[in-house]
Length: 312
Ligand code: GLN
Image (cartoon, rainbow, N blue to C red; front, side, top):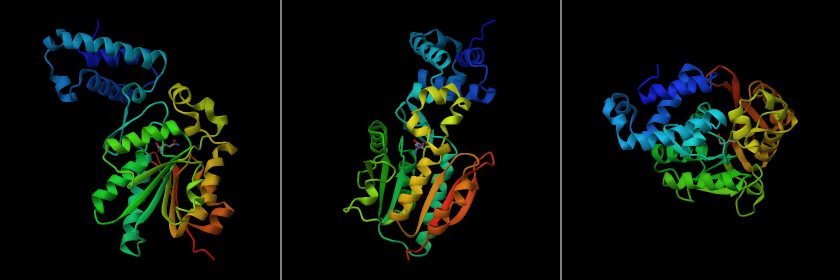
């Protein structure tokens, strides 16, 4: 027997079309699809009386839902690209296949950045506070950081730079910044390879207080382990890095040596098993103190907090 409620119908369709989805994922996707297609909050959707579903509004929405489900199941398009939106730290970011879909564990990076800023404000603080987000993608890190700084430190002047090597990604990121009312003074978006030319630009002195980044770090050899959603739809340049995934991280550390102020922080997300390796590198040891290697929600050591040693 066919389930009658549209949410059940969505769950049922997802379960038979994408059997690898967990019950929780199916539940979450059904909810997002239902809310978006019927333009109703979940509670209203759950409590809609049966006659709503016979209305014309429902019929036209259903056609749209049907084509989204087809794309989701047959082409394995990630739901966030189908809806054009992904949530990050409680805010809806516009996303397109030009940018990586923000991940929940990356929220930890922003939270750590804010903690470091808090500890710096308690001691000495350079004014304005200057930071860079390298490989900004949708802009989720830079924008969340800028909004949190505005909220938590209304009197602290700050200047952010968000770089990406993709002009299409930067277009998505700057439209997200506009959507959240951030000015170009708050975040300047720059087309750059890691931090070049930002770090060698004479007009922008090499005096960053914080560099934060979720760089591409997947080894191309691991491509076969990725889901079709990731491998066939997310931008390869945001996912993969040569040299077993370390190539961009290496350049990031080299450029950060030049761009950071003494005592400035470099905060990075890397792949499972990579953080300890990076912490052991000679370049890292000679120019940075490794303040911590820390874990994601599943207990994998995926993050590094480094602090630039004083220049000698
Ligand atoms: N900064 C973006 C994010 O964390 C994009 C990262 C990337 O493209 N590697 O989602």
